[in-house]
Image 1 (cartoon, rainbow, N blue to C red):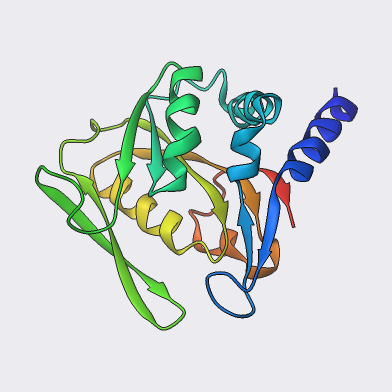
Image 2 (image 1 turned 45 degrees about the vertical axis):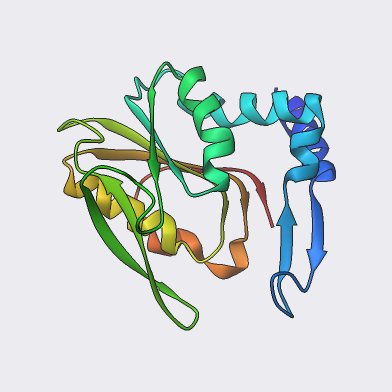
Length: 180
């Protein structure tokens, strides 16, 4: 099975293009739009994201704006869970909680609806990519403030050289399809 999963990982990796110097010089942007265009890659990515959490009785998948929405809803459906969006300020219509996180120069905020999940809910945090871990860390804090339990993280791509895992909840599983 490990050989099959490695073959799937390689195939998925081949469908993602890298755009140099986007959105600014020195950044190697991982563009998943090419993955989304390939129906087989789309299916296999959804399968690989759900595999580690299939029998964990997940209550919610928390998807991070905006690319975390693309697979987050599929992941929630595959896990028989609800989906909760975490968004940038001013994008959610009902009363929200806000959490700040550090950027390269300054800070930003993420928000979640105050009634997004119930006390003790088992939650997976999902995004397409983890870099420095700032947004996933902020989402973790929001989930915890609402009384939820983050039982895992789910990413398509992990840029390991940026050490994003170090900013997540210690001893919590981090599942990434591709690690660069």
